[in-house]
Image (cartoon, rainbow, N blue to C red):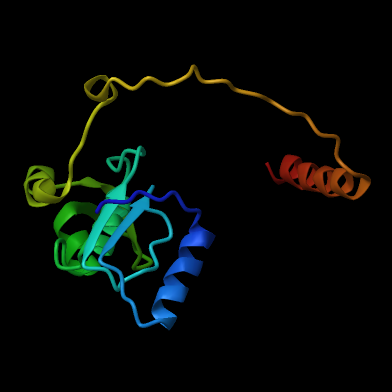
Length: 155
């Protein structure tokens, strides 16, 4: 029997804790947006996101690490293999770009299902942006004025 339940993070945490107290471990874990992954006792894991992971490789690493730490291996090896860096005199590193991206795409292909907007034919409402302006309190206005003063005279 299949069941779909919509839960907030807090409700999910409460449900998981109740099940753990009764000695029941979960079988499936699905996380929306891939944020705050905290449960590791599930046999199957899926992450749903509408946010592209292609912006930064560390986001991709983080999500795949949550699903299965063996997919990409340890962070140091991942960074070494896929980041183009320049070592600074201070010993720190500056990211210049990425490398071996075709290899990475091939490596993650079994775990990633990507769909573009035009492929899924979303029936979404038009986006509505609302701006709300709020007056600052006197302490806020004073702190902001002090910040602006320091910022102007710094340059």
